[in-house]
Structures are given as structure tokens and as C-alpha cells.
Image (cartoon, helix red, strand yellow):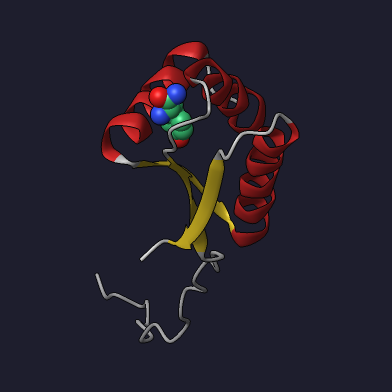
Length: 102
Ligand code: TYC
């Protein structure tokens, strides 16, 4: 049997999915914000459960900082600001920062 299929070289390139650059939200330790308040903010702003929030808070407490999550730039900046503002509203120096992911 003859093979009638003509094999054409594949010239179509698969379109690459465009992904926006991601930003880390980082929690910084300080000496004044109560631990329970940090947990509260992590739960409210970053939708963590008690356990996750406690671990992140303790990591920042022990090491000085802890990466919380990665988001698109807008979301990361908004959440960092929300967390920082919540602390400020209670007179605490709680601080969240953002950083581009490598
Ligand atoms: N270090 C604070 C205390 O001892 C608690 C704390 C933990 C504050 C993590 C900020 O990101 C933080 N009360």
C-alpha cells in the first residue's frame, strides 16, 4: 500500500500563554504588633486559616520576614497596603512589602 499522505513540515508555532509577572507579598517582623493581631490580619487579607496564619506569623517573628504569597503586581500591592493599613488603624507598625518574583 502506498502512503498518500504528504507530510508537510509543521510551520505553525504554538502561541505561548502570556503570564503576567508575579510579585511576592512579604510580612516583616516588628517588636510591637501583638501576635494575635498579625494572625487576624493574615486571615482577613490573605484568606488564610488559623493554622496557616499562625505559622506565617511565627516564621516572620523568628526570621524577621516571611513570604506570604505571590500575586499579580496590582493584587500584591493592594493586599500589602490593606494589611499595613489595618495595623496602622490600631497604632501598630505592622508592615507588608512587595517584591518581584525572580
Ligand atoms: N514580634 C511580634 C511580637 O513579639 C509579633 C509579630 C510577628 C509582629 C510577626 C509582626 O510580622 C510580624 N509581639
